[in-house]
Length: 307
Image (cartoon, rainbow, N blue to C red):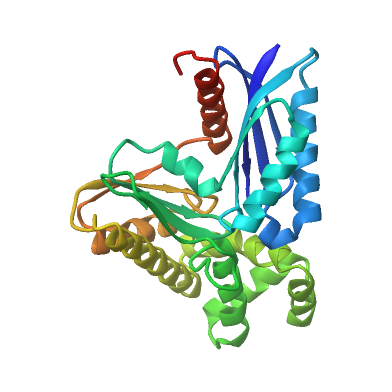
């Protein structure tokens, strides 16, 4: 039985969707993070392999994967893209393999014409296109050089602020962060964050948004600053695409979106202050399913069928 596979891999998880030739979902799978710029290639490839295997093997029949589309964080770097392409081609030697960034997947779900997607998850980035189809991106290159306003960035800033600020809000936020991380003091947090920052800073994000929604002034100021940064990121991209003065759809997606009333409102306000003509909406898509549909289109195009 012929099928196609869609993959969405990022800094938090990897997801797969398997479709048959008619576009029906056969199986879904979920595994560990697979962004090589954050966890290295051995761990990223192992996560991909495990997630793919568990998804395909969950179907108790013989399958031929005719096409694969993988939207993978970290593949904006050519060397990373090429290594992931080789790996997946080895897994599916007789199939079409299309590797693109995870950002390209969400942009594919937007209406035709000028559009921007703001992605705020473990990392942060914006991707968009103009009326001619030219695609550009801002951010998304890892915490060392970008990812401002992301869960990683918010968590890191929350730890820094709550341990030095002398206020009741800071004391309360400190107590909640330490308890959530299972640490008795900041020295323990420092040891964990040096060894594996991705296991510390993004985990602080839900503590911050819960505190903000409960009225904690420090948490609210941290989220307000993050929202302004995300607004600036989107505006910079719109300017580079020459669409900042136009009406265009702007989709929001990522693991930090829809988690907090305060943060969602702050993001919307920051976006509309800078881009008053944008039509801001929550982009409710499953990227792995988008990837699977792209794979199905590739397969049908090669077979001479109508996508």
